[in-house]
Length: 481
Image (cartoon, rainbow, N blue to C red; front, side, top):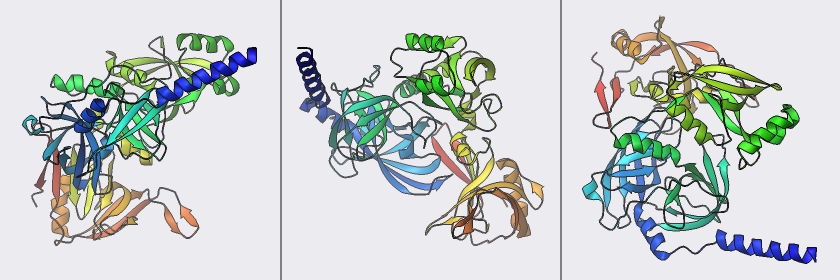
């Protein structure tokens, strides 16, 4: 009898889940979503540390009165001088401007003239409700000059970590085929957005938790720059069972945590690494577990931890961490993520110089605001190690000095450039981060090098690009020689 009851219960639950996971969405909901999703055509003229390219993605109309279109950060950048064109469901196109991108979370906001929206387009409501495990969802992909396509799926993880971005809270959606819907939304049955589609594979899409977007929108609508604070710790989720097994967390502490966070799914926040030059770098260690913030227990949801940092009114925070079998209290200051934005770029001798932001700094282990170059023209005058390409070279060069004069900022470089141009022949000193070698042998050591440079007047003249926060555009000006 017990066996029969178990089978019946199992069949009931299976049928219920299948029906829920394959819900039939109302045609009107799908149609409204399709009209709200747009194509985003990005034509990059200059980039800081990503290959110059023309790329296509998706976006979603979220506020017609303000002209706001939400998209992924990767779709519009990061840190590029570009033109953006929006394509609507009916083939009409409109130019857009980038008004905000987050320095850690993968989202950005474009803006168009509100009068250019087709009247049939309805702005999508962004839900304030957390996504649920097993929830039926769909996403919409809109390729340029093509009709939008809907892809149904279901949420199979509400707290998902990936390694190729800055730490942020994602959800994972099981989907039957590759959607190509990056920059679109993940919609619930009511047609509301519950996550921002950021990437995917043949079997899944991942979406950014919308609390990051809600926080930014509230500030922008008040004509303020969103407050973004951090300590420089790159966090991930870790198994609570492994904490007990390998890090020797007591059963009593485990019970306290599970009682406080019954939906934690056996996860806890852990320090994966720290960003050099930030407050966390000398105070936290890889493997540290984040137990409490300012005396309040911290759960496994990274978005909650990030939100707590943003709203903290104190310059210093008190972290309780679990390390090597015991609890420790660490006082740690916050810093302003917006202070590390790349707001100025210099073109000189076929190379683009800039001061690193947090994302770029994590790629090579440098402190933010370090003077580097990552992209060069094929005929650059700087003969440094690089990966060649038909249209550009990819390099990883930390600039140290020119003509024996130390250079630690873009402003110093700008002042020195006229002298270097008139002199024509000069030296450059740098640290190389590109692996060197031949065949099976590779050198990964970051050595200091010195090279000779001959200025070529046939190249484009030296130029400074600066972000104009008033007119929401990059403005270029030649350096007076």
